[in-house]
Length: 217
Image (tube, rainbow, N blue to C red; front, side):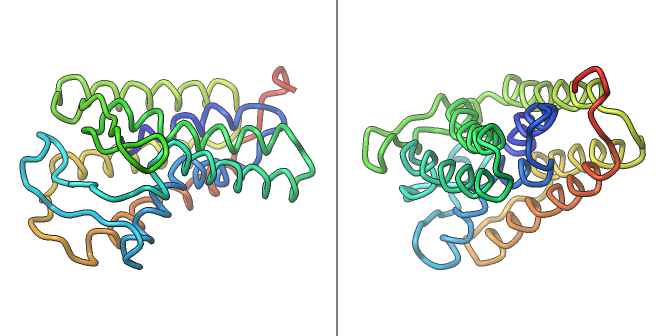
């Protein structure tokens, strides 16, 4: 799952007490931000195995701190506590934390069996990356639904919204149909970090250009 991880962020942002959209976008990919950073630091590990799934060539064989359910809840608690403290809003903190936890649940749908509950076996994953005709419509569908939900419940400039939708689509198509890495190098996690950062920056722009409709207040 890639752009689908931002669907919960878009939905959560329409709550009157939600934190800024860009904060929720960070939350949607927080464990992947952490994972690729940990890969660069040698704390967690992955390798490239072409054909390991039909859609993604990543063997994510060691990621106990980010992609275990326990680890994800830890990251969620950290972001939620920070948002709660900064905004003095329990609801904002809970929303931010919930978006982080949604990452693991969405990954559970598409990953091969490389997720864990506490960092050790059993390993879990429903493996939709081996079923592109399900995974692709699912990812596009939940992202489009979230974008339309966000648009309906907010008002303001349309340009940032259209740019966000277009960039998410381009990033996802590039992820699916672009040239895939054949061997592991620092370029793989760095590319991932850049790809996650671009929508976060766009979310800042989008969040400053649209507000909740009065009927939602």
